[in-house]
Image 1 (cartoon, rainbow, N blue to C red):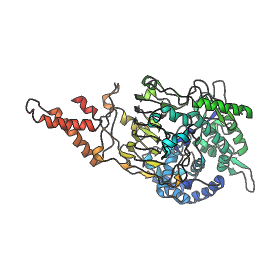
Image 2: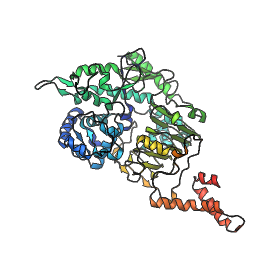
Image 3: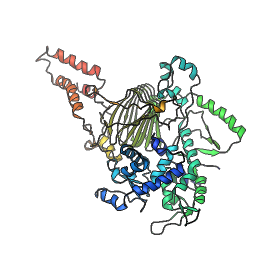
Image 4: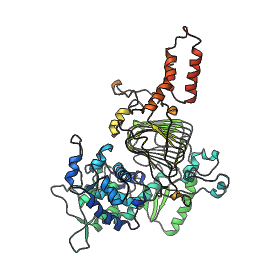
Length: 605
């Protein structure tokens, strides 16, 4: 089978795997996993239907002023937090986490959009999840990431620098000088292309089970199963369809057997086998330039050696000019081939992941990304060291991965932020949701609408309220749907086990160790971060002039106490009282020396 990118000469649609469900939708909750997935989820479906209230109940609980899309699920049942908790036998906090995570990864583009995907974050409990969407979401909890490549001299290095944390799996047990090199961690980690191929392979392997999970029996006392157009649309959690012009279309409209159907005259159900065959012929990875061909056994062995050598090559560090010019490829230029179970995937020389902007491998530099610099609605900040990264744009998804000794300032993120394997990094972000996994000695300044989730092997993390602003912040918050009046930065949710889905091999017994959450930053250590002022061509009326997230009183008082010496200095009359200036200068120097930031106030002086 050959899977290729859609072209203008090809009238056939292409079904792309949606990376969001796999990168932001996997939860380390043991209750979500079943030994026999299909039968377990079918039994769960019965429980969910029992817990689902009548359809009319949902309509009464929705704000009449809200402009929601009519759900594509018709009269199919929906279930809320309480029903999920009862069916899965988990706490309501974990059930809400399941519902909220599903809402963050549902496809919100096209016409057949489920109600949960477009509901404001603070109101998802009043809407609930479609049972079939929930079952697909629970099924993919069996997904496993691509395993990392162990360090070549791991045994020898461990004798000198013993590994004590999961983060050492890729910021490995090396000397401090070796850890400074981003190429060390990059070599051990799977590339974006490998992740996308792994996601494609997973969907291909499990597609028959997924279709059987959605299908219904054609007639009583029959083993023939069929799929309706409405049921087929639920695969939109994992797949998105593009036509020959690379325009997004509904899944059911892309399939010839469901095309041109409408609610008044729906298309007839189609046998599962026919649907499976068509999907397998048109499915491809998230990026169109990945193409798959078959190889013989001998060829695979040769390619395996070549691939290992190419992945071991070092990628050059990114300069300030390169980083600001455009997205940086996460794949070394020599890595053109990736093995899959049934063949090999070839990459073109100029391969770039689609819909994602990378800020990768920045060393000792400052990088600015604004709206014009972003391709797609996702950003990945990876392997940056001793740098300051500004991504001041409205986004849906952001991943911060493998950074150290850096500051990352993000714009408004409407769906989810994921921070993994970072060390001594400050994250400043207004977002709907955030997950922190396997990090240490980081400080997170959050404006977040849902409880921040901490999972994995974390150490010495601190959280604090959001502490900055930039000119277009309020416009970006409104664009992506983040509510500045709701900030749950201090309502930490910690999952108690090491993430079983990640790409690393954990020490024996580590899955039984309780995960460490985060502590609240002391108010006296809280500082306001000043984003540098660049030339803005926007109207003065549209500019944000202050932090839209209200500070808790202790942090506000601490901030006012710190700013007071500066304001006094600005008003000081040198000729009236020279002696009184000395203690004031001492106090001002203390503020500037010990608090890193206040650069905006200093410029006024």
